Image 1 (tube, rainbow, N blue to C red):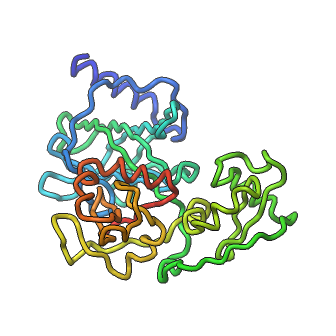
Image 2: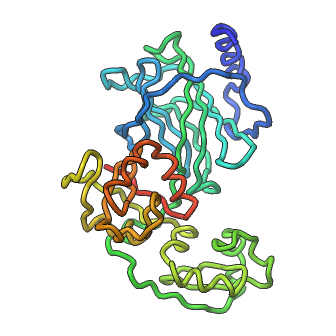
Image 3: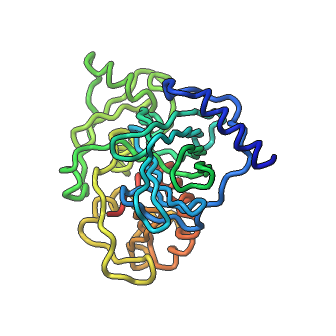
Length: 326
């Protein structure tokens, strides 16, 4: 497809989208077949998003449970004023065929944004195709690129991250009528991923005082074995970021500090070797696309830095939201 035809189709798409509400299911993809190559190794942007270079423009993508934001910078790192720029983001969830299109409009913080509830895919890896037009400094005022991100899990209060969760109390308690709303909100068993009620009445656990509902008694044993994991899957992981390491073992690999301990307790296993984090002298911390992943030995860092989103996705599927770096 020629460059002119791509530009024409992208512009037609944006005109059609206009100012409509940004939450439309797409059954066929937007017809852009060539996305700009981004920088090979994404960096961390000023807003803790993924920072890539696309056509001599730096693009920072920030994905959260409350929406999507895109910040633009010149090659020298200066913020680019969005002005009358607009955009479209097409989102697909890892392993799902459906695609969702969202309109991006200028925000007060000089980003292009859409406010949309992504809590239903918290902890999942998503692919995003962006088409931005009217961008100052970009070739023909247009930027087209693709990104991959893990939607952070919903959060619990920051105070919960101050101390490690080493001995969580887990107890079975009766289900009461007031639990109906909570059961509907949770919907699925975090162990079997089956609808609550599909195997009889839901089983209610209190884990560190917070309710978790299971599809059957057979799931109780797994929750008791790793309560932090299932607490994070249902109620979110610690709401905190961790600092970049200062005690370097090798490039991008650092010794951990006390502030890392809640996340070490939550992750437990190295995503490369599938071994306990302390099995080979660890844990260590590796910087991965703006997040911290804990590993059992420095040798595992190479695979993670080569494909950070793969391992962020592995952790997300285990219910672990890798903390952001600051």
